[in-house]
Image (cartoon, rainbow, N blue to C red; front, side, top):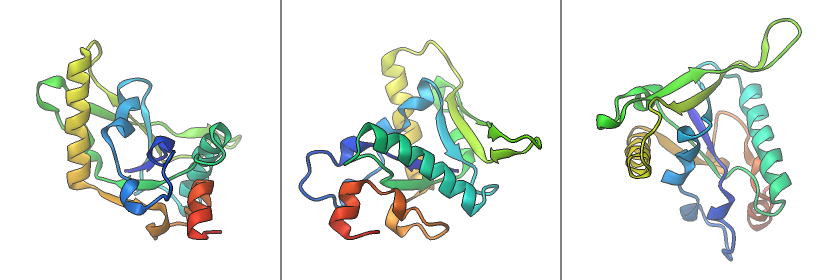
Length: 170
């Protein structure tokens, strides 16, 4: 699975946007407990699909904040990390959710998936614990790459404007 990290709060107000400051945070997973967290199934995705998905996120982020909006990094991890039971708080689920149907019955984004919480009605403290455990598992079993260091496709065009300006990226 690949999760794109797009939080602009990580870089706002900083004089220089350095690699060490673009890290994967528990807050990056919050949507998994609300509306669902979008991810890409890397074993099924083409380069074109990954770059197209990145462009959609970039456009959305840059429209909201032209200077800071964009992709900071990605984290790649095995789907089994998410699907494991999380203590007494229930499992997280990953659903294949292809997006953008075409007239011929295929999808523009066939490798899209959503990570969602399997238990509703958890109190806020339990949600925080669940996200912390999930974050730690993804971090332990996954690999984070800054956009500039991704080698399976070109994500550099989707860096925030402020990062491009500082690094001289195209």
